[in-house]
Image 1 (spheres, rainbow, N blue to C red):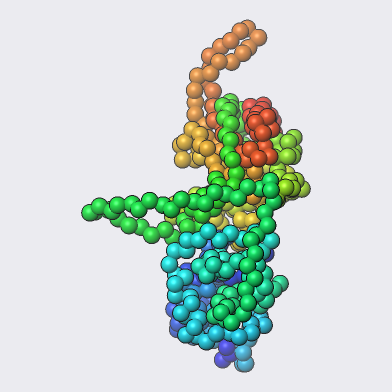
Image 2: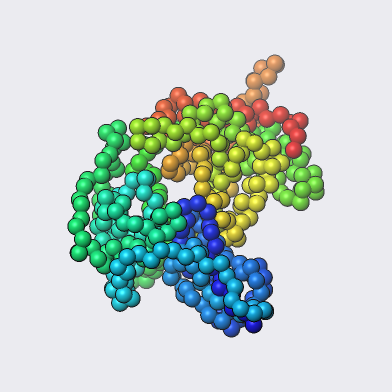
Length: 435
């Protein structure tokens, strides 16, 4: 029998470590090749780790809530054959590594909720755990830049920063205020939350990891971007007729459902091509105009949380290709099969609030994007139509859309015209469009 070390796999650019959520097997259990053996969480996405070999789990090296680095062994399996097998990723050991007791003493307070005013620029990549430690210990960005990271591409790992904290009193510290572009105002400090009284019978539900991330991101998004929202009501009768005519044929041919979302994405992509300055991000005093059109698709998860998988290069996909990409991402999102890279790189986002029966919403712009579109429910209503013989009242399929945009770079004219073009593309949808 041979020993196989199961390593934490690479999870995409910028993801250096993950937290163990739960093991799906116990020590002594037999597993088959491609079985999902452990659930992990990063700051991007929750996912499962499959085993590339069949064997018996003889030792679990990383327990629930522990953090593992990419390439680090998380379990040992006993497999058929002789010798030991694995491809271990070795990292340089940081100088003056503290002993286990010191590490524990430093790390224990970090299990509590972190509250800090320390902010770091986008020039320095920090994992959520490392950032939390830096905030808890009031480590400045200047200090962080002086730490030699032992992770991939010199990035700072948990061990690096804990070692620095343990030896911090023995080394000179250079304090320097971060330089900030004059045109980029720093968000106002958040006022401390008021204490909420708890009455008898009230239930206290701790936020899970994903809800904490969502909460933090939403607060930052509102602090950073001055939001403006425009609304429009759209007649999507042709869209409804076209889908009714094609959905059965598409499902029979492709084995997949044809939803409204591919049509919405197609209209949004065409409008972005008309107004490319909506497909931008802000970096200090610079506007970064994106070459690719990557559409984020807000997706509700079974546990009530929200995730935004990304349709990459949506402008290069046909309607059929969009339908397949959307179905695939939605399925994998709801079954915790997304990879971290599946949620990265969006340049514009669509949120379908109509799927919950809502008529409209005022969505929050996900950073660093500058706009987001909310699609409302499609409702049959009487509407006035202009005909050659005069105005008539007819039953039509109507839908509200709301467009939130960052008023730092998107004025009302651009945000409004972009929305009007999406409206026009949907209202004038060609019933002979091929799928």
